Figure: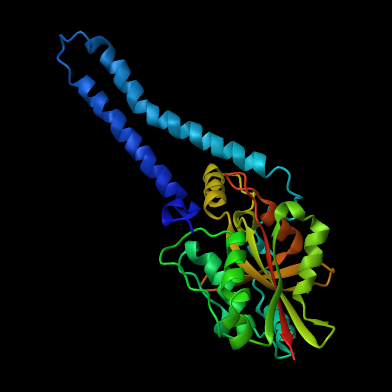
Length: 322
């Protein structure tokens, strides 16, 4: 796995450290030139050279920031742009509606298989670098009723959905002790990484419909979970504010909240027949869930980050064999 130094959550910290280092390196010759004896042959040009050296880090900083701003607009100009894209989902009525949440969880839990409760099965990440492992362990806690966990790494690290897919393959599906001995009646099948390039909106909606309770042939109880990789800035930081500070804040969040990993465990249909998916935010302590209109969730997954990469889905299907 990547080390903590490659985490996008530390992008601005590395950016600031690099700027400070370049500024320091340029300041040393600039100060030396200003300390030259008045009769030195370089004294006539030293003032202009020193000013140029001091200005150089700021010019580099400005060019890099403009480049990020251009990427922000270019990479996200092709989103489907649902009608409420300019407002934060925190302003929408279903955002953190406890009554709707309890209704969705009740419907998922009424058959007493693959239970999920917020207090018992939610695994928290105290650093965004642990979000992927917390999201996966939240799903596994529901499937195995807290009987199995994937070990967290020693240090926070970015993890991709294909890497989580490989962890499931290696530590569960291919491990006979887990798959056969410890949990003989629970099978993980159809574990699949789905790139955002493989999804259009209608296909995404069809997948989200699978999060409801499914009964299939051969007396198998089937439950489908998803872990989504998306850009959280596209959900919680709308584009309707006009101040320069707000614009800079959106750019900052667009960088640091990319590849945000969260489980999707259910959905609800509102009075206007619009779908809202139930997203669990493993990095939030006070209210670690929110309902997102399905079109907004699709946009957030399609949102490209500063490297040009977008999100995707990890589908985990659990079967209970009686």
